[in-house]
Image 1: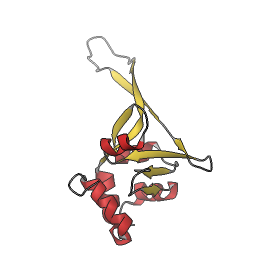
Image 2 (image 1 turned 135 degrees about the vertical axis):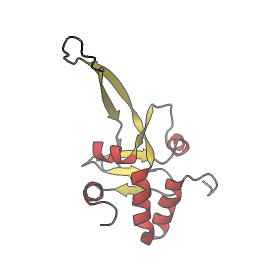
Image 3 (image 1 turned 90 degrees about the vertical axis):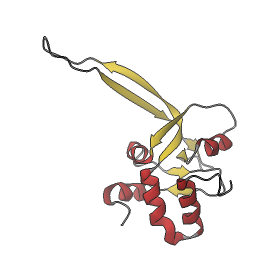
Length: 141
């Protein structure tokens, strides 16, 4: 992937991988970005009680299913991707995917091991304690 094709998150990732002093900038960019995951979502309309004459909007419940991959040791890891093109280069068949705010994905998968761009030249493993710290304390810690 050339610099021209890279988005801001990919540039920050490349910088963090090649220069660890850029890690805080990468985290900041990650938390402000949207990322792709392999998975799907379903919507189920919920019932809500209402009194006569009150207009209450319908509530919609969204269920998200995110695919994990297995490492060589058999442990699960959740792959996430900086762009659709990076995701497509990492899979061998057509798959459903979701575009989510990275912060939302980190909250949904808290406690799981994550790998950003797992089959790319520049990838970053996000360990559970690292994600928990990032969500609780922010980038400056």
